[in-house]
Length: 324
Image 1 (tube, rainbow, N blue to C red):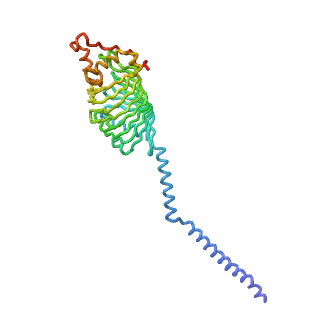
Image 2 (cartoon, rainbow, N blue to C red):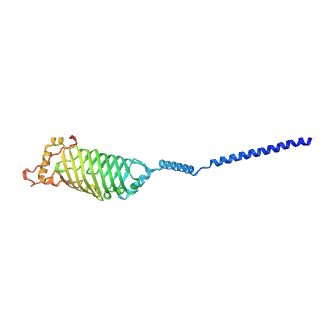
């Protein structure tokens, strides 16, 4: 009897162990199910990979030194031509427009170009290959050399050009439309035929088409509206490495503003006489930028061009810009 009572605890222990093993089995199955449930599907893996890739690209764009790369690339592309290009800040964007602040271009031919801000909307791939196909928007544009200086505001260029990274107008090729709102002529050569220069003339707007053909610029129906006249300009400029010596073959058709014609009636009379004698109101411009020539006007004012009746050169105002 005592033996049976002593065996009872052993049976209880055995039953307890079996029970615990069963519980462990159930627990093990549940753990296995949890592991199985945490495995990611292919779709979920692709989504996570895509998010990681996009995050990397965004991070790369923000930290990559595009401005320094741009300086290096521009300097390397323009070095053979001797052109120096500098800017204050390069605002680069993969998508949309790109802009450059305080751009300065210096050329070996003493031509200096400046702009406060340039905004470019064109394909990045084309730009890297030296091509431009899009729009170029400039808040201001200052052109300066030893003979001519003018300031244009709100300049918009739209067209297709090649060899734009050469830094040399002699190699530029393509067509672009130009629109300008505002500006002035700061400095111009003295024009003997009118006994004055055009310094101070206000520019209201300019529009027309420019065609670049590796060394020449063709001007097609360029319309100028200024403080003294409305002008239509056609013709061609044959460029020279020394810009001042570029050859001009232009036709300029002026129409004086009423206020300027009333203030300077002798100028209006002279143009009317020119039209009668030459059967046109368009004036040929020859020579170069540093020494422009007006052959027809010179002939009218020269000896034997009509004897004593030949008109003398009209005296232009010292500062035409002061006229409304």
